[in-house]
Image 1 (cartoon, protein in one colour):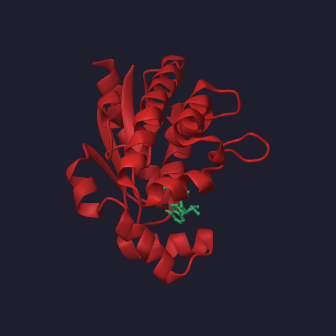
Image 2: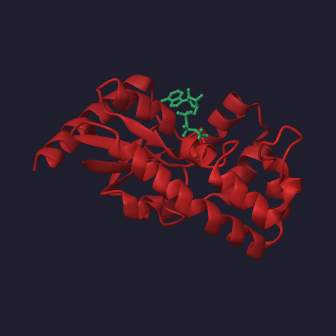
Length: 198
Ligand code: ATP
């Protein structure tokens, strides 16, 4: 099966694009869903995280205390690396298993951090949803109720637009209305169907 990796910055339109592909019968898996699944209560992933970081990263209910964990690794690159070395292989495996269960000529792997780690090795092509920063900031502010400063800080912490675009095989420009977006999805959908057939 042909696998298309779909990525883009915050509020670029990844979910909206994935839904437009879904309306054309194209299934997707979501890296954020896998990232939660591998540390679900009772999972070996959660046990490994507790073994490495201690029970203080658990809530009273026995679920992962993401805030506590984030604070723990935030200022310590070595700790962060240790956490990633536990989680990334598990997330990668969960995504590959989820993809293997899908049927169809091609599927999408939706991942905000597709280009930051090893995940891009799992995909055949990289599709970037690109959006001018001003539009992106406006959508973050509208959707999340963030201030302009908060939105700008998030953008600064992410991979920069030019770098992401340099890694793209295909680009969707999401600076217009939803109809313009659907039109681009339709064009790419036909292209991917042709690729999958070949
Ligand atoms: P995140 O990674 O932050 O979860 P995302 O990349 O999945 O975001 P979406 O949730 O699809 O982005 O879109 C972000 C916001 O912008 C949503 O509120 C969505 O409805 C809106 N949006 C996306 N594309 C358009 C568009 N072409 N016109 C107007 N609004 C849009």
